[in-house]
View 1: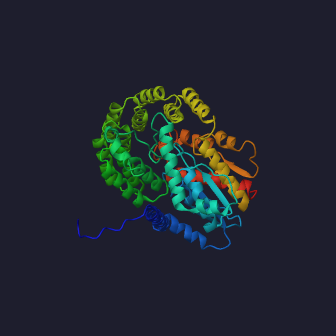
View 2 (view 1 turned 90 degrees about the vertical axis):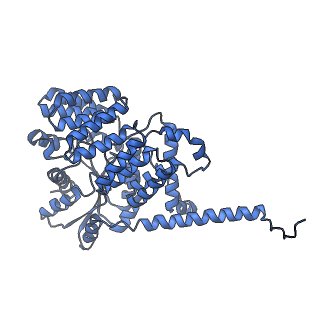
View 3 (view 1 turned 180 degrees about the vertical axis):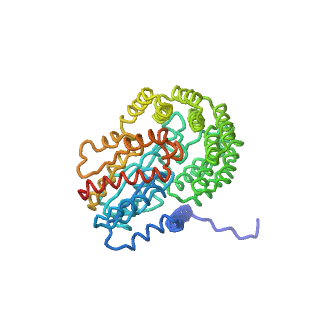
Length: 477
């Protein structure tokens, strides 16, 4: 027999207690980290917002949206409103965030309202609502449930679950344009090692991919980078992480790092067309059209059944005035996805630039028919949720349609009760301007098919149109 004393045995109850204590401690640390991270990002946009708050007695307008709002038209809107000298001083607060979606915007709206106390909210949102997002939760008076919903950990866990669940509900991966969310298809290496990752539930590639995407939606780019790098360390052959990392760099203006990440993604999974599309767009933005063309063609060869690179190559040819080549690619894209309204819009814009008004009108009509089927249900739900929140606070709602797009689908969201809402139609004014001076005078790109991010002139036109609606509908001038 051994003379060594027997090691004390830890009871099952004690082990369970230690495990639960560890989980609680980890959740507390995560909650603290998420809340602390929200205070780290300081930008020029927020500095301007704080400056606006210093002006007492002003009429405050809060602008919400995605990349078409962030650092875009709101600064011109404040200028346009105050130039009228109508006896009212306006302060415009810009809370647009590139790459976000309407669910993430609504998740922050109460915080924005409490901080800035606006008299009016201008919303132009929904273009990025292409995947699974946080749906609206019914109101409750339970203090316990309200406390749970207020936790960042709860919101994060729920959003991650929705993303994971959506992957099993769809038959194909969704994709987004330059600033929209992307879900890349699984790499062969991930499938080969599925048992290995299953051994660590909640910490496999899906966990890091969805967590990184969530941070991107929230504008927490440093956390997104860190999370996506952890995913790469776990599986260096999963191109989702390189796409997400490239997006994080693009949204921060770190274009060299973005290109390097996307090249690594192509090397990891040569069959993923999204990496080629994003890399080609960077070359295009830099004026390196030959490299962009070659990259888009490689993306088509990698996956001939995915229309994403057909659209990008077509827009590149259109930009260069190679209309017949662009037309052929747009039609190939439509054949692959007959329900892609952006492709019809691109073809309509192409015919308009060529002066073929009959064909332009035909394809604008087809794009319109696809869009008037209604907004994405998530977008519609979030607009209703926004209206309900603002009504309770007696804050005016302005719903703005994207340039070149018909206002009808947006108005249809509120067809049962649109009282008190002001709608801003930007279709006619932008189509007339583009017809007169050309597309590139008003837009920097074509990410939306028939519209894109505005130039300064485009943003001034957009801001002026919103300003006119505000003065007419709110101030009667």
